[in-house]
Image 1 (cartoon, rainbow, N blue to C red):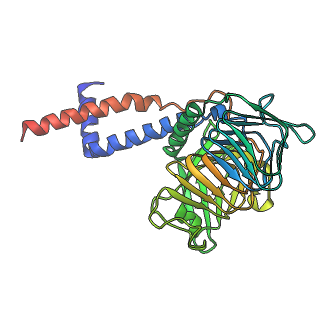
Image 2 (image 1 turned 90 degrees about the horizontal axis):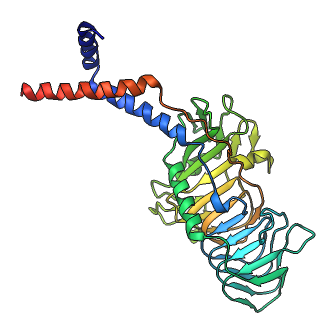
Image 3 (image 1 turned 90 degrees about the vertical axis):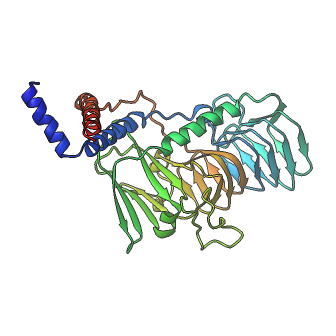
Length: 365
């Protein structure tokens, strides 16, 4: 670049605010880099489990269709079934690092598919003061490293929480519909949207317009409660405390991706939805959920209904049925959406010009 063109270019940049150009360049670079990592999703040791909790699992009835790994104690006061659908290969259907405590009427049944008894392994003690236990029971050290597994899941949750797909948002307050329309197609086929407790309190339908994206895209909803809001339709004892930003009430909401809707019940869409509860320590569920739940720091309390997906949580308490519906995670090496070459070349130039501008300002001060 000649000295004449350089000076003209420098005048042009200065005339349009150096701070503006730097801010623009950094924003574009950040978006590109966030998209570059959007496809790097792995559930690690939790991948083949229907229920994966770091602490205790307690229930009085219902069932988990797939396999379960429990880092604390398994506490059943009544009847409960695991493993009607095999989800973990040749591993034990239920792995418990702590104790097994069975009480009340009914059986704790462990299957490996509907016609075959499964295996329950535990690391502590087993007590049975009511009913019975069906399946093979064996005391042995857990093959799952829960500390390592949840360290990875917490990192994944934090990474997803920091991502946002460039999106147009339409808040139809009249019809109570919140619509996200991705601005561009992501080659990694992963799209991340932010939904708050206030959104669930205000809209009965959350819609993703997938006209410009693949029908098998992975949809991630980052669920947060930044204002510490509550759903006042719940009873006083059931709802979160007002102002508690770490508590979330997950209620009946219709999720629609393209032409598929949870109003239609269980569909192929369920395996393409992940609800991420980063920063939530208390998750309260009172509806059916069509998708998987990533809540590695949350104690989940659940009432009736069905979850069609995988559950990863700090602990579980409740009688909600959990059906095996594996999350469809992109397994191929992500296509990195690298920052454009012009931006990589242009950004150092902007920084150099800003330094020269600051030096000139000091000289004439």
